[in-house]
Length: 236
Image 1 (cartoon, rainbow, N blue to C red):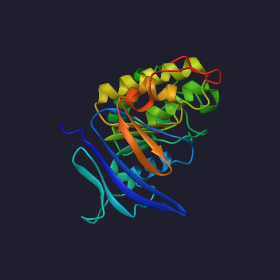
Image 2: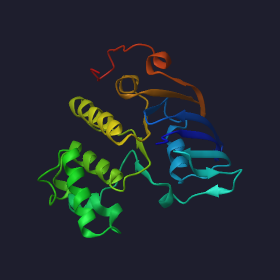
Image 3: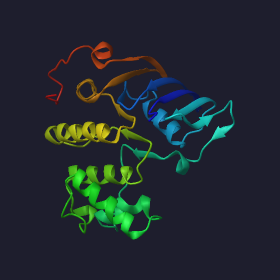
Image 4: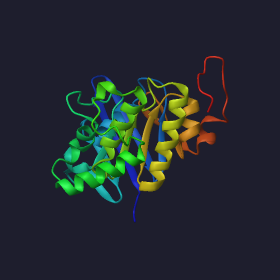
């Protein structure tokens, strides 16, 4: 099956100009760089939430966008699983209802099957009827991830998925995301400005600087070997 990812886009948001070139396969790609370098904007462009001035985006040979071919699929038709930096779970719905929100159009049997699969994947069995306010931070992140994957997306986009988690939970969730990417064999693009996170989780790193993709390749080639500083909280 074709799992190729091709992104070649130009976009403008106010005075900020983005020019991004990303290629990949069914791998976990980390967008690395400081705040304001365009990482989240790239995710929004891929998801169809940000207008692209010129370029093309394709996943598995299917064009989400091509200004040359006059293709611009709606966000719903792109089949992107998207976990923004601050995912908004619905506090009036329980865990099961949150996870199934994106697949409400499927019949009940299909919803139940997908729900139980995701509950098992994210170690949430027994929390189906729990309210979001009753969950820990790590559990809430898992619910948000399960919801993003419920509709079996063609690509998964993760914006700072480990923020607000303690060190142990970050490492545990990162390992789960790596395993899920390999099980699903779809491209995953993850945004971080942490070198340790990037080196731990990435198959490929795309370094962003001032709205441009500066370079991309193997993590250690892009970032060097793992180094811990006094200010670093990670043990990865």
